[in-house]
Image (cartoon, rainbow, N blue to C red):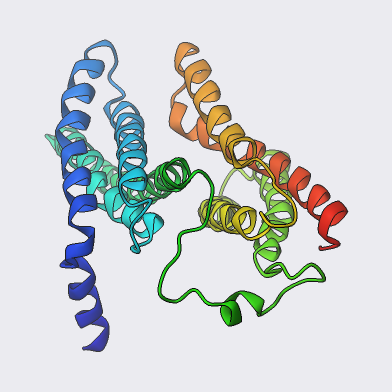
Length: 292
């Protein structure tokens, strides 16, 4: 009962009204652009998913900038935008599923429903991820990389868990965990390359976990950049901008090469670029602060 009350309270939180409106605004763009793009291809799910995620990313940028100077977390607002905006991609998957079920045999119908359910899950997760990424960047632009001051900020709060320079030392652990986890995922998915059974399920589970790890690492990276500003001033535009730029470049190249899933390819590019910038960041952090 308490959990249900929290869900209802979160869904009706007036502080996130703007994020909800922006998320709703991305839906017609997703549907219209997908309908126009699908004229040249039958892969509606791939096209729709890519456009939905791109629309939500732009919406997240707007929301992050809008909430940049507000006490409400921009990442929380971006999450709301992504969740609401994923409805556009979900609708496209459902329409494609219904079309595929028309006159299909029982066995084929089960396969179509199963694939559609997995596609919906990917659309939701990637949309939330895109909304949070956009919000992080928008918030950084709005605040110029400086931390927002809230009522919870206090000298006592920031002195907990500090390293030898008095800097909050907790965030870098999430970054280090991402650096260690990402090669394992890529080696298994592309090196071992399971072709069926439990191996494929494990690969899918690891990719889902990688998405969560990317979100955690990016959030930790932005927080740590803000906390070390008094001792060392890393450029957040490099450590956050390079992965986003990598996503854009890989996405465009994959689209020009008629890739089946350009948004997925872009996500792999983002993951690798984030891994490289995270390694570089931890190296410089050790040089200037002594941790990790």
